[in-house]
Length: 260
Image (cartoon, rainbow, N blue to C red):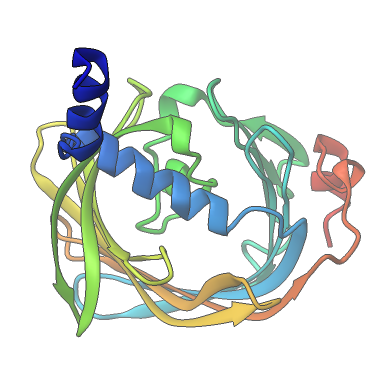
């Protein structure tokens, strides 16, 4: 037999080598798929109830409205308006999330009648006295982290990926985050946050997911527990609406002052 033909026959029959994914490659692949499945919702509105709970279990409640606009090739734009109680009524928060650059964030304080810019170095600060930081309430763009798959396991009876993601921004209040991702729907079920000393800081748990437009999953309730202070914050979401016709003109510094 011709040696060349024999060589081709061997190549055809010889099993191809299997190249294993690195933990970093697999972690990034999971993050990209999470982003892909939530892409294309356009815009949304919703109402929120924020329950602040101190270490003694005492509670206070705030009512808010949320508007979100998806921006092509960049992060989302978000406007949060506080309606109740009276001492925070009219306060409004505007955020432009970016994939690579620092996010732009502003807070309108009606008592002072002025718009305050949130410094990128203050992104780890508390959002309106809650256990959510400013960086927690922006859209979680893929480019904001590096990733590493840790393991597969079951969580609350569901198969999940456990992925570590490390913030790229040196101003982040976290060294790393560990995310439990539902294998079927690619949605987060729990996130553990570690502070700048790499000590456990907070845990965010997502509850009661619902699907909208046959594709987009949103949790009806989120609970953030601060393990270092004993405080917690619950966000209850309701009245979701999608593709309402919002545009960029609804998300600018003037819209903060007009927010009612």
